[in-house]
Image: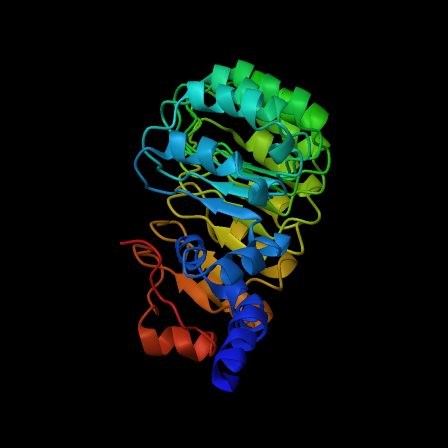
Length: 349
């Protein structure tokens, strides 16, 4: 009898207390499995709102129906993060259904990842953003259905966005950047990788109005000119800048980038018109650099590395000078002599 009572106390009190501690480290799938173990465990776990703040259906099939079903459960009424990266079978109709059936559960959502969900269009964006007024982080990488209209819905419905990933959204134009610049002056992260319809005009709107940006990704955008790049100097809080493939970037523009004194990571891969002059400006202005890629730039020489060594030898841990045929002293030992804290010598393959 005593043993039975002891086991009852263990199941009802001790086990739930232990699980409350470890549950924060468990995956969503493991948490759901634990609900089936016992009634005591079920009641205990669902009483902890803090462990039901995230939903992740990344790469899963039937993700749309799964999401609607999950958000219909009371335990997800305070969800803050939904991740659907490359989830299958998620369409506009599911996002519209969420707005109708699960509106209350989405009122606290702060982070929404729709990366690779290529069946989502402007119609779906209108529905989901209308249901998520507190959204702060929105990512919709690799979606060619989204247009300026989708961004219009976003800025209208979600006023607090600070991180925005539009990488691969090839059908947005300068109009989208104007909308973002006018509505998100406190934006901290922006990824515009391969948004090939953008021009100097749109980028300058961002650079002039979003002065809180800390991360800006302009990877594979060869259409911008030095006139736009010069305005990067207004981003005084910038820490991460990716200009890979910026074929029109000149030393004058790079000298303006050097005014971003807080830069930690700078990717200049295939910026083919840059020379020692521009890189030396970076060395003199950005003395906290930890990551720098000069891959494929034939106009730089050992002279720029010497300048970088004088100012950044204690900070740089990643340096890629592969393909820089003007740099003669680029063996591992020679680079380590200049930058003793180097750990990574190759970023691009």
